[in-house]
Image 1 (cartoon, rainbow, N blue to C red):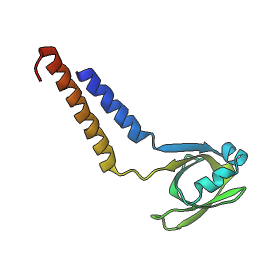
Image 2 (image 1 turned 90 degrees about the horizontal axis):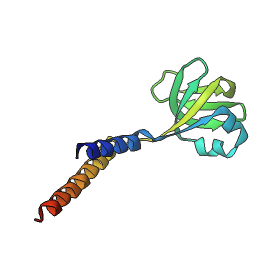
Image 3 (image 1 turned 90 degrees about the vertical axis):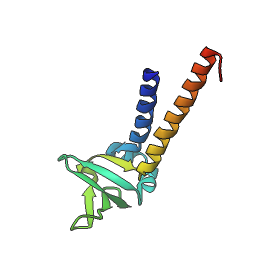
Length: 124
């Protein structure tokens, strides 16, 4: 029983944690349609100097990106593609959805366990 519940919790945590699509600069240069996909999306840009920028991608040129960072003093920042390691598309996750999924899976697990134990004892 404990082992199955452990697997359910792990799967639901993985579901909530796998909310990102990661792209390299090479992928952006090869597939130009990714620029349209990334436009106006919330992204996390990992730079070559280990700096991370989180903001909305507003403009994609062939050699640079314009990122709108809401909580920074300088709101718009232009970044050269050669300075970027990876770009992650971040989904806006509502924590209530993740908690709801975990609770629904736990409830389903308890229903299955109770029906299995009732079948073993011969009562319902």
